[in-house]
Image (tube, rainbow, N blue to C red; front, top):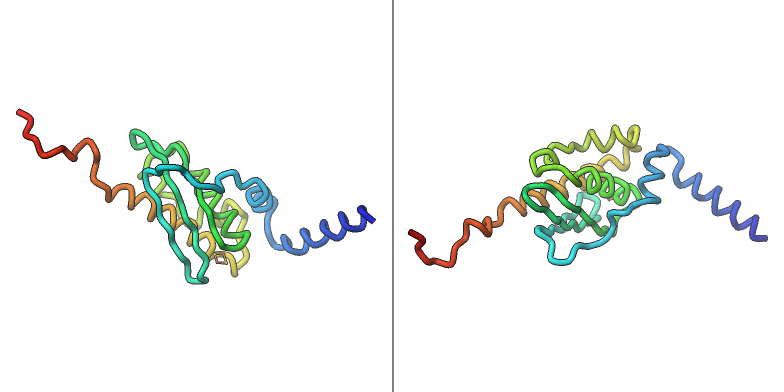
Length: 150
Ligand code: FES
């Protein structure tokens, strides 16, 4: 009986993942960047054309991205794409991470099905918004307390 359930589960998984690459499957089932960051340096919530939302959190020091975490109510492709951009951004400068393109995600996954191209776009848009939001904040080192330093 257990063997049958395992086989059913395996068949279902294969059916759901038909059309997706092994890299996609690995990313989805090992999505270690899911989560939140307490007191993040930046935080955004972006909703895509399909109505799904990604929330992303940034930890950065000396212009080097230390960590990016995300949560989403989106599909499995959104999870895989957001995880890919989050882990790829780690260790990069802001400018380098801003260079991550929708096509990079699509190529890494060996071409996403047409109906999931926008999931890659949403993940990249959210990362960009996260970094722009961080850049738009006043630099704490430039913001004084109003006193004049001679
Ligand atoms: Fe909406 Fe994937 S289906 S982002």
